[in-house]
Figure 1 (spheres, one colour):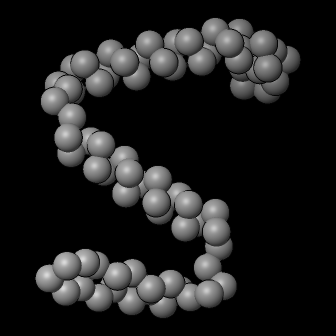
Figure 2 (cartoon, helix red, strand yellow):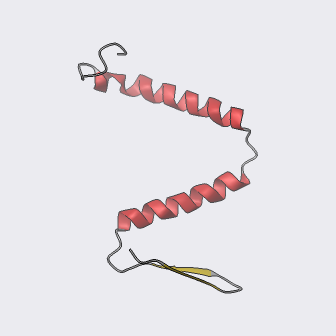
Length: 77
């Protein structure tokens, strides 16, 4: 994929080929949003780690039944 980046005093332009995957473009835009939000965050790494643990625990509690009987999950479900 040939990507062209141009800039001037007012803006940055990123040009992608017409056949670029819309899914890929959406992922890139989400990443830009993520970078913007993280740059404004005042959270400490310890707070982020704790939030990640809480989210992962909640996800596992809601989804662990999906893994019952699956190879590799015999001892943890």
